[in-house]
Amino acid sequence: MYTELKVYQIIIALFKKYNVRHCVLSAGSRNVPFVHSVEEDSFFQCYSVVDERSAGYFALGLAQQLQEPVVISCTSSTATCNYWPPIAEAYYQNVPLIVLTSDRNPAMLGQWEDQMIDQVGMFDRHVKKSVNLPEVETHEDFIFCQRLVNEALLEMNHRGTGPVHINIPMRYYNRSFNCSELPEVLKIERLSVFDDNCLWQKKVERLQNSRRILVTCGQSSFISDEFKEQLSMFFRHFNSSISIEYMSNMECDGALNTSICLDNRYIADHQFEKMLPDIVISYGGNIVQGLKELLRHFAGKFEHWLIQEDGCVVDLYKSLTTIFECPPLYFFKYCNTHILDNIKNDMQYHNLLVQHSERITIPDFEYSNIFAIRKIVESIPASSLLHLSINSSIRITNFFKIPPHVKVYANIGTHGIDGCLSSFLGQASASDNLSFLIIGDLSLFYDMNALRLRHIGNNVRILMINNHGGEEFYYNKMWQNDNSDLHTTARHNTKAKGWVCENNFTYLSATDKVSFDEALKLFMVAESDRPIFFEVFTEMKTDAEAIFDFYNSSRPKDIKSELLRQGKEFTKKVIGQQKAQQIINLLKK
Image (cartoon, rainbow, N blue to C red; front, side, top):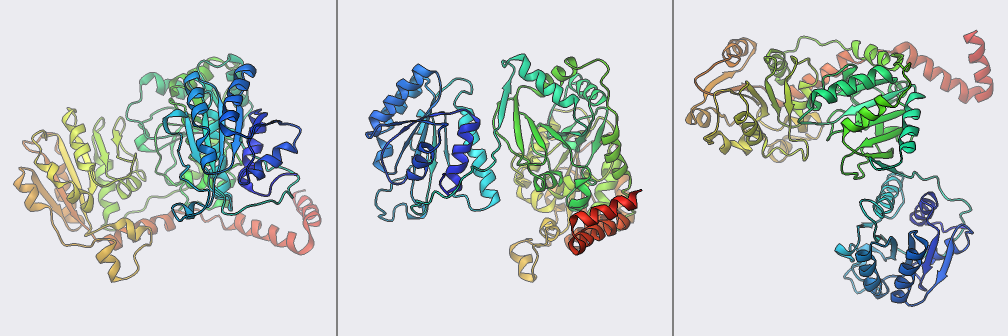
């Protein structure tokens, strides 16, 4: 029987997945849940060494002789300190030890709790990885804990071998061993370019047998022509669709901007479930679209393959199964060159997403930020540079079709508003093409000193949406009352004109559709003797409402299928699952 503590259940279950068998155990009270669980399980080989310093060295010699990782487990406080010498030795000899330190209630640290010291990261630079586990009470805790243990175990033999540290806090003693089975856990696999070819070939075969593959392209600043061709070839061979947003900078066969059609504010969970992929393959940086929220809702119902050049664990969709430690180009090139010649995309999955996307209708908008941004992005000349300040600028731009070969950037690594203007000006200074920035008032004023830089060329075009504050807080329904405008949305009546003109920009402004269209002609000129700044005045409250009106007006009205779904569920509740299925089968005939 196993401990009822989920945190130890996860550790033990993953040890089995990783084939970690040998445990050197030191006497103590805080590690009893682990010790008694493994000593009762015939899978594990247990060794008793009371002195922790000796136990660590014993495990070191055992691991060297077996050429396998060995676990050492102790109670809290100074018991953990006695591991220091053997851990240091293991680190410099590259010996894979798994150091389990049992801990006490984190809230009691520094409160004169007996047998308690700060154990988080205590072995510092003498372990390859150190994780501090959460107390597992919810499903979210379970996923988080599972990921952290995977991270530690993966790092044992990642780019060399060595010890790793797992610290396990507990609020109270637990001596209950009433669990007969361990929970189902997910082992994360990592493949590198140096791994055996047969392991890679199994993945290719898995792709060949899959009906629904979704490639999600994250933020990428440079995409080579060869990579575009390889991803196009992948799409033509495998039953896949390529999900992009403009910051992916990917133009290839099968590319579909899913920013609206697969946004969690646009599509209901039961509708997305019909489009759920078997495998999600991701590469690049962050993505902004609500697709990631939809995928997280269905965590565990698909495989997530992450292409991550440094091999780090990034579980964006909470379903990570495999990390490919290689450049994205290598991955897709390998898949394309190791398939059967007659394999072709049957297009069923891609067409399903396309049909859903085509149901979206773009209305004529009233004067608002969405009206202004649409006009700009649809008018940008091909091959221009476009930088988007965070959140609203990114979201709205992805609603519309931009001209080809426009390079798109945004500071979504951290999603901060503080340096968007400066980043854009740095990019524009290195480009000969027209360079556009779409930015909000708070972001612009935060970084306004950048307007006086000496390196601003005449190719610069800045659109500033001045809607008198942070529209994002209205969009996310954080506005409560007038006090929210003071402390949250930071409502203001500041204009940029004086500072802009002082810094030798051509200044344009608009307050309605007519003045906007007149200024737009001047803003889009190919050549100018000065950089151009376009200040568009709107209202943040109505701007947020315009976006929601768009979602509501274009959302699929799939009333028939929804009523049928609800009717089926109601029938099952009333007459039972088996009888209901018999009736449904008769109706199908």
